[in-house]
Image (cartoon, rainbow, N blue to C red):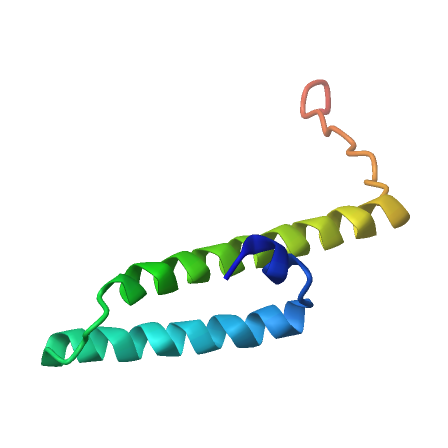
Length: 88
């Protein structure tokens, strides 16, 4: 699949597609082990598709985290340094 086609999909669609590709890769490996796989380049292209989809899911999760962080800034409480010197 082309990357632009994948970028147009939602996160749920990408998750489903990733599961389908992983299942297809399993079946291709099984066919290879049995010796019935005719098109061996399908293994590589399926792996590349899995990598593309995984990368897009990470990108979308990162952009969602960045946008959420920009909307609500988190304030950290100031840390008070405890000193043991001089306390007798």
